[in-house]
Amino acid sequence: MSYSCEKSECNLFSHKECEKPKSLVQHPFSTKCVFKFYTNRSVKGCLCHVCGKNIKGYHYGCSCNFVKRYAHPSCLAYQPTLEAFDGLTMNLHKVAPATCLICNNKNLCSKVDGWAYVSPCGLYCYHVSCVMNIINENWKKAFMKGTCDPFQTIRDRFPADMNRMTQMVTGKKKAKDRKKVATALSVIFNVLTGNPKGLIGDAKTIIS
Image (cartoon, rainbow, N blue to C red):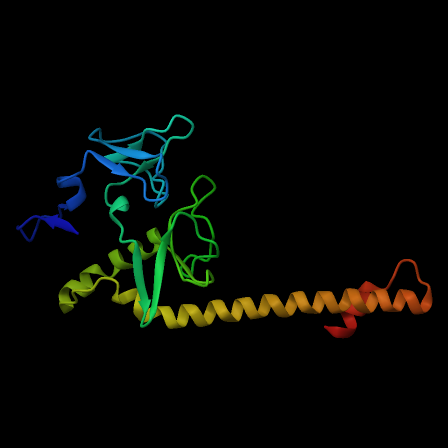
């Protein structure tokens, strides 16, 4: 949620969490980590622990001694669940156990894993930053249409994303099965012929 200027020509927006911040916020995935709100405008070279983007404005910093985490106020306000489809609720996790259905990556970057909404089975994931990017891209369209639910965009695309991921998993499983069969054929061939080197290449050619 954000505030905007009443003047139509003004493009100024401010997150609700930045206008009325909490001084301290408990880390949702760690009972030992507490975030403190800071008003300085930037933290050079630091990335948000949630979305992986640079810290350029108001932010939260953790009080941990062994590792420093930073987060945008709006990122710490993400809902703990996302209804991606009728009857399917995805829960917020600190890491994605599988590749994101939007960016096709498991981690946001080398330095940040990124929080993600994950299905109960663990196969379907959305980085929260990827979800927000899509919502922001469609915000103006939704505003003009009077759509009050920003997450409808995700619900509309989830069936296609799920089908695509299922096909990818099936394809990888078939490739793995073919490799196992090729190895088994090579072992059998070695036993029958006494060939110490085996013919794995020939076996792969036969079943491909």
